[in-house]
Length: 396
Length: 155
Image (cartoon, rainbow over all chains, first blue to last red; front, side, top):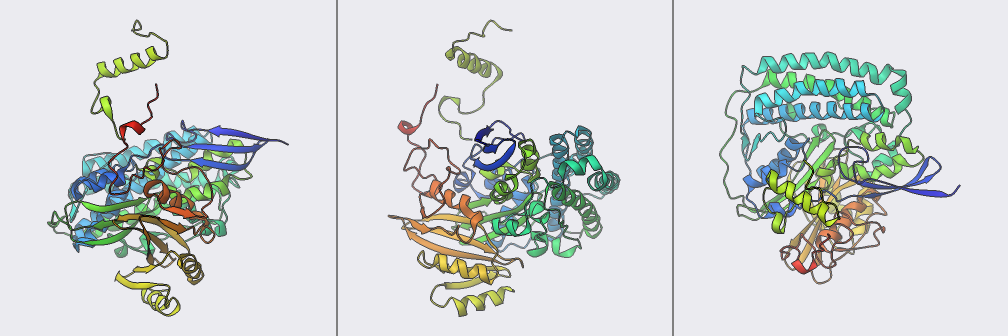
């Protein structure tokens, strides 16, 4: 049979983010894939070089909308290592609490997306409803649903008060019951298993060879988790299991994520119980001395790596960000080969890709610099259509 | 392997190839090698247990470009291997034959810093667009933005 080339994207091929794939098909089967990335390249690494460390934290936090705490913590750990700043124990615990809350919110979001991609929209509605409870907790403590702004060189900006703790524990309890139901669905529901089992296979050997990270790697049987291997914040003071699975397909990736939710709940209980009393931040210098450090962090999607080099001034010499999706993209080709075209969206969604993180680098240039108000935006769009030969100005 | 075991292995098995071996804290090792030795060193490191390269950081340090290969093992150790290449003719060999997952990081070195990676598998650009003007490398310290005459204006 002759080969057909089908182009997918860049307008939201699976998730609501831009990336483009060229699929080479033989009938319905995918024989090869070309990936095109870079649509979200915003130049954040370069922009950090012209900003001081405090400004850089807020910029780095915006690398990704979901793993915002992950990136800012990863960056700040490197800065603190260079400046030899010991953060107070309470600050380390609060960072860990946020890390786990973020993981729960990210995994529930993913579960919903996965449900949607396989035509199981009830799961999507359920998971996203439950996710709101975590968003409420995040907003309760930090004031924000995303981009929490918790980190500060030397500690955290906001404390967890004793009045907030009962609500956190209550929410964890409710979500635990809900998660039991999701585990039931992922392991027992024949239609769900039938749809996902054997789809997007990635053997352990291939996963190791191509450097798959996070739940994608763990679902192929690789027990790799930075929280365990290279502990940071308060992870060395609590007990938890690294969840792995041997299905090595989309079903395995689902099981790993739902079981990780349960681990996160019990970790949060331990963290809250052990939460040390004391300060939440120490004063840090504005200028960071010469040095370099590399920091690793287990984000919900896999391992973040940040490299920072300081040159003794208020601004970093170089900041390098490696987000987990970039590490997992090498495996995409392997997963898609031999699968059906109809499985494409769920396979892509199953690595829980985040192309914002991956490309991380918007510069507005020329006359469009700054903010546009409603009138200017309307004018802009009318002109755009006028250039194309349509006059829409009469439309109300 | 522990961090100290890695350090003694580097000192014993890579006598001439790897220099400036040091550690800043547990699980962090820094060392240096040359572009000529890079492929051999990577091969030996893979055999010794460095399962993959997490990423490559390219830096503009004036006369030279510096690339740090972040190797990692399954015990949490991170070996940061530095390689220097002259700014006038920046060139490094590919390590995709040993670590096939790293091709995107190698594209990134070329797109952002202009370091030619010899033997890298051909592919589309990453992360810059296909129509990005030649000779413009944003992460170089002397790069101050795309000159206006090179900006393509589409109507």
